Image 1 (spheres, protein in one colour):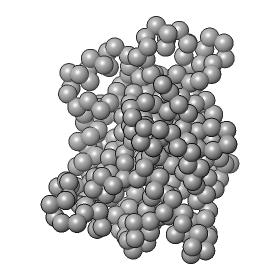
Image 2: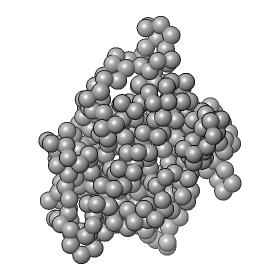
Image 3: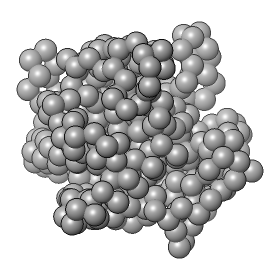
Image 4: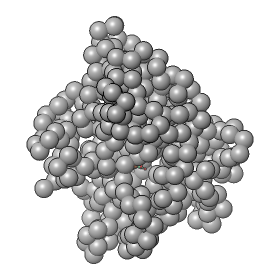
Length: 345
Ligand SMILES: O=C(O)CCC(=O)C(=O)O
Ligand SMILES: [Fe+2]
């Protein structure tokens, strides 16, 4: 049975085996950034609580304006209108670079690590999506791919780099909220997130006939997966289709709410927190509504945040009692990410 994570008057987040109305998972981020001390603490606790229970929260009143957002979405749509051969000339190459264009069918996000299983699923029903990844600009070994700036695409690079920086600043702030919520020094994570080893992923799910989903019930726009890093900032248009897996295994709709940003915790943050924070599985399926026989295209933007690639990540203070309660070995952030990416491309 599928149930809505969100309804018109508030947010429903699955808790245990039932759905519980928890409007505090729709969080006013301005209360953290600009509130008085008690508002800050209260908001930080709500953010942490959301990550510990659902793994997903919605933030409203974030510092990224709706004008910026509209502009970045518009620019992304223009990019995907480029001819396929041009896009392919900027093709994604290696997990270490993790930059450039992926055509539909290229990436099959999945929980599986067995390569033959991944291949089998890929051939049966490839994800109906294309994406373009932008990493930290100026990394010596890995240049970003930039389309030729002419016509509609003039200003592309500065638009994306500006957005990248704004999202990077959001990452720092959300991590400050998590630190405060956990009772750590508010700036505890600052030195782990200052480099900005993050990835801006533009996503386009092309128009698709409803028939495609009818013929193959397993067909999705993006397969179920968890994200790999610390947190992901997810901006979606109004189409819908994003679903989050509840603790009892059903998928619930994470309905778009205008003006909000969905934030979810990734696997490395879950590991860092000794599994006190949840990295929740999610996917993108056939949207709830169609214009006649076709689903219009859907656009989304995911900003994947990571601890600095050079950093060593080990169970956070306060998340374990004795050494024996640490569930994981320490690990290097960059190596962890490359390993995870290598399994899905
Ligand atoms: O498009 C979306 O809403 C989700 C994308 C996503 O989960 C991802 O790219 O990791
Ligand atoms: Fe994701």
